[in-house]
Length: 213
Image 1 (tube, rainbow, N blue to C red):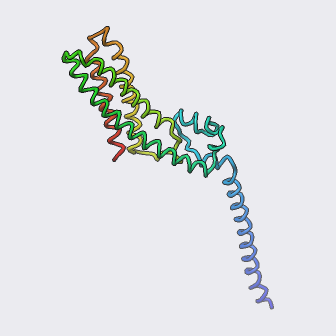
Image 2 (tube, rainbow, N blue to C red):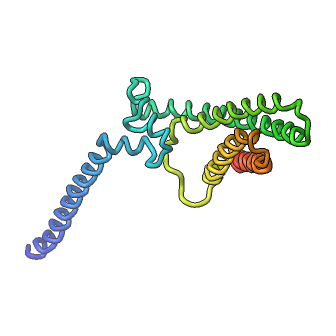
Image 3 (cartoon, helix red, strand yellow):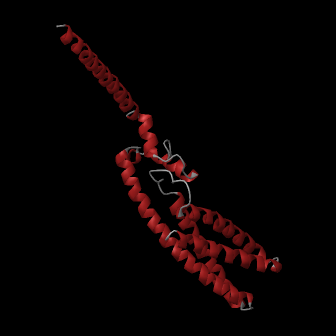
């Protein structure tokens, strides 16, 4: 009888410890599930932590687009936004290629103009207007698109290089236009205008090439 009692004691202790562990684990699991199911956690998961200012203004948690029921922040709507984003970025690439081709034509016309062919001045200015419209359209399609689902991974990526080059060709585009407005009064600025245009074209070309690899 004593032997049976002694054998029962460890068994009862083992059952008790197992039950306690299961109960405690269940509580922890339930607590974690409760935390994951809070509205705040869902919002964090649906939007990346880092967004462009324009994206935050339009598509952030309290962005302007969130005022419309169609774009309320929810998993289903975010899926729709990803489709919109994909389409806008496709148009972004098409507009970028078109603008790049116009820049090339503008450069050829500009070289002839610098060589003394004054008849091309009006054509040069017209193509320049087309380049500016195309460039602004290209930029808007990227800056106003809905943000991606997750933050970018750390380290090197072609997207990061693409964004760095974007700062370069944006600065070059501004410099080119500012210098263009001063060239008629200050002809000595022509070389700087040409160099700024070439740098802009090079940076834009590189940003488009890098995104493909």
